[in-house]
Image (cartoon, rainbow, N blue to C red):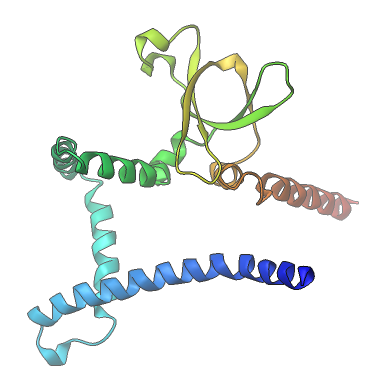
Length: 214
């Protein structure tokens, strides 16, 4: 029974992420087709509509919004709308949390979080992995600037949250991992072994290059 349970659990762990990812994509596609498809049926003649147009329209809307957000006027209008939401009780807390979560994975934010560092915990030999979110001391609050301080974010494993800590630049050590690998590694408490996999692949690639050169 123990062997059967272990085998079943292995299969579940393998299938579940694939299933959840596929279901999320399916839900998004069906929702776009349903909402925008019904809207297009009201505008277009019945003979002009064919299945899939709602999904294509949804992709077009997302792409169009992305293009519009490059315009300064649209950015300012969007910022004004967000500022109004930030003054509405309850909505401001929910919206800000969701907004901050998705902003963390946006292309613009990834450039700011691309420095992965390790910080030692006293003389214990333990280290924690974090992300430098603000490397410019002058952008920190005046009371926290100190002498060459930076802001480091430490995410919590298996949770959406973490701690922002002000540290001297000399207290951090750069880690050779990109933001995506480090986030996956820390959020899953190292279960994915992203860093080790990357280093192993790199070592194999270096060995292959040496063999070819010989």
